[in-house]
Amino acid sequence: MRHLVPLALCILVLPAWADLYKWTDEGGSVHYSDQPPPPTVKKSEALRVGKLTPPSDKTKSAAPPKSLADQEMEFRKRRLEAAEASAKSEKEAQAEEEKKRNCQRAMGQVTAMQNGGRITRYGPNGEQVFLTDEEIAKGVVEAKKAAESWCH
Image 1 (cartoon, one colour):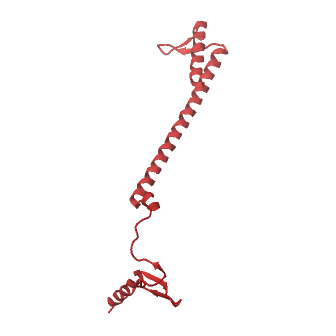
Image 2 (spheres, rainbow, N blue to C red):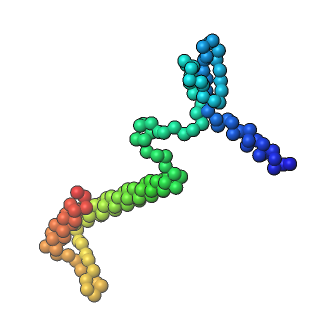
Image 3 (tube, helix red, strand yellow):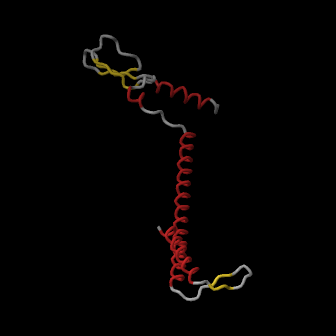
């Protein structure tokens, strides 16, 4: 018995998909029917057509709706592109930050070389060796070149 109720409901729903016509006869009476009006009727219209109508020109030119798989693929592609753009901008920011640090170091080295005083470096045996005036002048030129390369 329980299986008959859904079957009965399905049978009752079937007429809802049928065509519905409205027409006015010669006497002025309005009629509604699921059958087409007689040919003698002057004015008639189809209220609901259950059959599929061919698509209009506007519908033909429009792109068909995308499936869920296509939408998901496009979403993942956009998310991947955003992640790549974010990683690229982060890498550029880190490179810019390192460039600033190297510029500061180079400028500090130029300042230290130009201020004079005794400058030392470690020799081949690990002992401290004082730089001569010529070595300091050469070091200032090299430090300025390094500063120009990092700061500009």
